[in-house]
Image 1 (cartoon, helix red, strand yellow):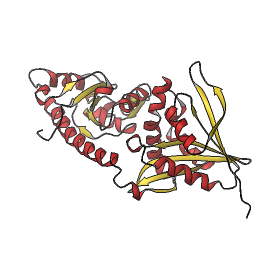
Image 2 (cartoon, helix red, strand yellow; image 1 turned 30 degrees about the vertical axis):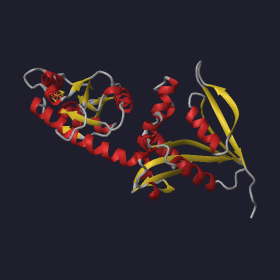
Image 3 (cartoon, rainbow, N blue to C red; image 1 turned 60 degrees about the vertical axis):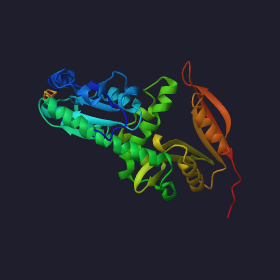
Image 4 (cartoon, helix red, strand yellow; image 1 turned 180 degrees about the horizontal axis):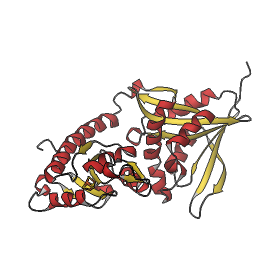
Length: 306
Ligand code: SF4
């Protein structure tokens, strides 16, 4: 514990447990087990939390809530799945509405076994999570210093990249959802099957660092216009030139198109600034709700006929 630079804060979320594991989590906070002696504090706010403790399995109703909590937590963050239900769905895994363990929808760092998980095992899991947290904090520092970005590779995405691209999309669009006060926007709702379907209809590019996807963009053409969509960059690696490289590569793949079009919302000042810097200008707007307007930007270019 001495390597920790600050007191970690945990947030507890009860997925769909029988409450057995929740009682054990609460026992950790009581004077008997006293997790606070390690400087660990329980918070109800995902924006203050370093570690997410989840009990119970994932179902259709809590899936979005768990993802929203996870994506609202600042990086670095750690997820601890407590009990067999959170790990694999447990005795509820065959239920019609149960999707399985928490790992089905967000990345899990530590699994705590047991039914119910014992307080000693939960504390052990949290302490293991602290080591992971510190590791992530160090790699985050390297990322922010741009270490390794020169080795970035942009290539055509294959269907095996789909899952990683969907995770990137969900974490990257979380800031957009917050700006629009709408956590039900299409990029957050998209399923893996829908994304895989898009692979057949659009050109997908993925940016990789040491084989790990860190950004993506997709596009298609109609007439002589190329529509570039869902440019996403890992939120930890933004402002390192990854988005610019993806855009340039995609524009180069649609050489036959005179017009390139992108869209964003009026809330995303940063996106608008980015696209304008790449040579795009606003051409039209469309109201999508009382408070949000979609902005369309285009870039015209001369096409050379060989
Ligand atoms: S692991 Fe056991 S005690 Fe924990 S939530 Fe599932 S059924 Fe309940």
